Length: 130
Ligand SMILES: [Ca+2]
Ligand SMILES: [Ca+2]
View (cartoon, rainbow, N blue to C red):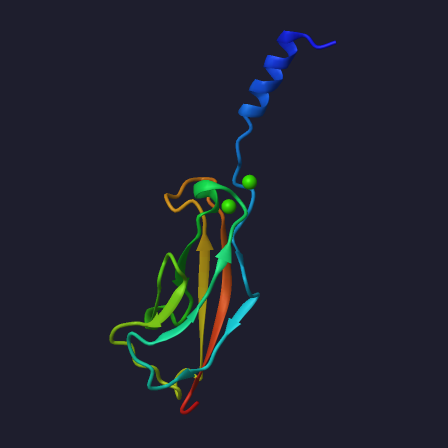
């Protein structure tokens, strides 16, 4: 037997369920790896990283940022994950035969205490010729 009061309280519980930020961005690869020619210059595209986030709204919106030893030589597009050679950067194969980057994907672009991040390594062997 249904009681009117019980039904309406159930309905309001369902309406109040809200997503929480319990998923971190997940990259499509555990580690990215691509060869790079020593004469590559701005704005040469190196590779595009991609991460997805299972949460809804801004909790699942992914942005990218660059770190690691090679971070000054490259720029990442914060919304699409494309990495290009930075303006003015010159690669030196003798000094750094392999450049290592750390790309961090983060959700909640506006920031806040619930923001979640994932970092992936990008290895770029620098070659004379392809
Ligand atoms: Ca969630
Ligand atoms: Ca998330």
